[in-house]
Image (cartoon, rainbow, N blue to C red; front, side, top):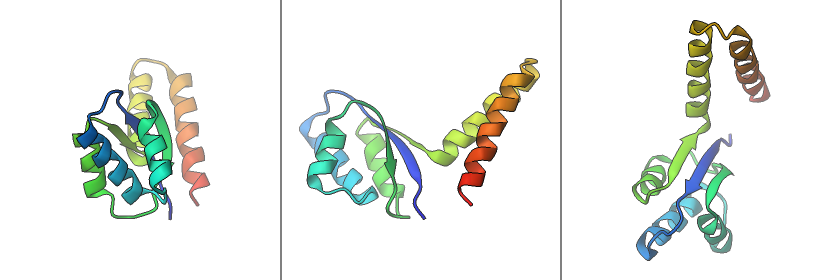
Length: 110
């Protein structure tokens, strides 16, 4: 089963960190060297598919190089917290919309 993660590579990585990020991307995805270099060279958030269940060390390598990594599950958890906070603030309509998104995501995974 493939999962999605969001990767944001900072601008101006030094050569050592560029190599570390490129290697980690290749370990996490089915990308070849050329594709991994393109991803590494793109600044800003990118949606990528995991091609492995062994993502602990590559994620740690990405984060130690200064990248921001968000796994889909952590995004879902953040949305749940936002929905909960919205209910407490009386923004029931916003909470309802967020919960509908979460349910749609969960149903799409079945």
